[in-house]
View 1: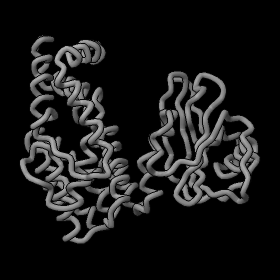
View 2 (view 1 turned 60 degrees about the vertical axis):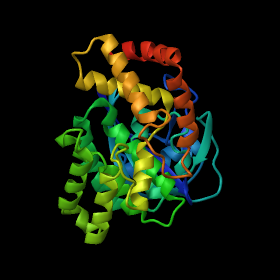
View 3 (view 1 turned 90 degrees about the vertical axis):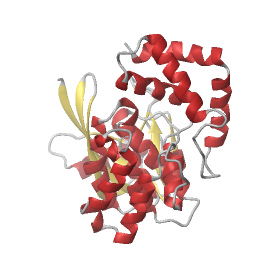
Length: 337
């Protein structure tokens, strides 16, 4: 491992938006980040952050709480990144080092190409902007989400984070408790530790037995959160029992045609490694028809979701066996390198 670099970053908030900057130089040109920079010897993180923001943005900031310290291994160095929630002390910002900048709301957080270390903050920021209790978000991020690292490639931490972000975006359309939505989305697949077939039920059992969640929720709320996890599975055979269940179920259905095909191939490779290529092709074809084709068991529950248009596109690909095979032949070698 190379040298370790300690840096600070300002997550500058203005109402329900945060400030992001685009690099205009170096190896990571055109990638997005939170403004900040290296700590100098003898500097406190707060002093370094004030100095860096003056140098980069010609602005003064008010520094709030430490949101998170992120550690990330880049190819040439180990990064320790201290991220503070901040507000502007004045009204002006001047880009002195960056190519461009944007104020991003909860629905826009994933619309830019983030540096890997900065990207890890997005679920917490989505929760912050939408009013989720910070201590709950920290518990779920530190104690629950890391458990997903033991699951198959299609259900790792990135999947849990994506479901959280989509669930919170959908929740903005309804009078629901966003803390409950966050918890249900974070825990919806935790039962994969007990195998795929009953994972939704095991997730519900885990939630009901979790004493830590009682720091934030009543027994009645925990029951609703558990039901939402139990009802998220597309093949469960019944409609979700609550609006929370419909939100999590819809958020779990990321209808991105290529991502769906890739995840189907990933699952087959993880659970049926003995199959030859043609066996994986047939399994992929059968699964996609069974779940996503016209008459398949997947149902959409939230009209505000963008999934409907994406599902129509996926169904078009599934109906064209030649096009689907071309997608398979391109993706399968990438997953078996």
